[in-house]
Length: 313
Image: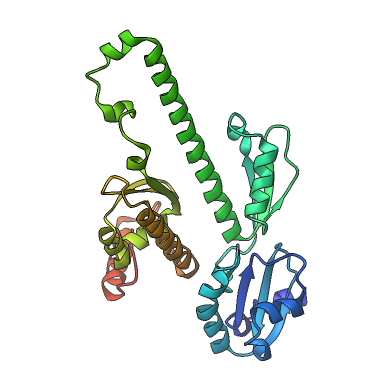
C-alpha cells in the first residue's frame, strides 16, 4: 500500500511509467531483466503485481530516464502481444470495471466460446463467470477495456456482414428456383443484387477507432490523407458517438488487396500511438451564461491558433 501511495507524489509520478499486458507469472526481477535490461541500473522500484492484472508501475531514479524509456519502448514493446507502455498520470484510468451484456451475440455464437476467445485475445483482463442472462463483469486496465470494446464491435460488424451474405445467398437460390422472378428483376442494377461483382472487387478492410483519436488523426496528421492518396484507397467513415468505423476500399476495385492491408496496419499503429499520447479536456457549456460561453470559445480558438497541435471540436 505504501508503494502504491508513493507514486502519487508529484516528484515520483513524473519518474513513473505504466506497463500493461504483462504475463501474470512474471516476477519483479524477471520484468526488469526481460524488458528493461539496459535501464536496470536506473530503476528505483517496481510495483508488481498490482491491483490490475498484468499491470506494473516502474519507478526510475531520474525523470529523463523515464521519458527516454517511454519514447524508446513504445515501438519495441508494442511489437509484443498486448504489451503497452505509457507515462503515469492520475488523470488516466489505470483500472476499470465494466458489465457487458453479451446476449446480443447469442444467435451467432455460443457465448461461452466467445468469452474464451476474448480471454485469449486480451489476457490482461479479468472476467467473472458468465451469467445465464448473458451478462459478465470485466476488470482491467483502461487500454485493455478499449481493446475489448474494439474486439466486440468488430465481432458485431463481422456477424452483420455474415448475415447480409447469407441473405444474399438465399435470394440467389430463390431466383434460380423461380426463373420468372429473375426475368421480373432483370432491370435491377447488378450492384444492388451483389451477384455480378466478383468478391475480389469488393476487397475491403474495416477498422474501429475511438472517435476523438480518429478526428485528431484526420485533421492534425498529414500522413493520414497522404497515405490514402498514395495507395489510392477510398475511405468511408461512420461516426457513432465515441466510436468511428472506417471502411477502406481500393480505388482500383480490389486489384491491390496488399495495399489495403498495409494502410490498415499503418492507421492502427498511428491510432495506438495517439491513444497513448493525447490528452482530452471537455469543457461543459451547459448551464453557463452567454458571456462565459463566449469567453470559453474564444479561449479555445486562441489555443487552436497558437498551438497547432491542439484540436478543438
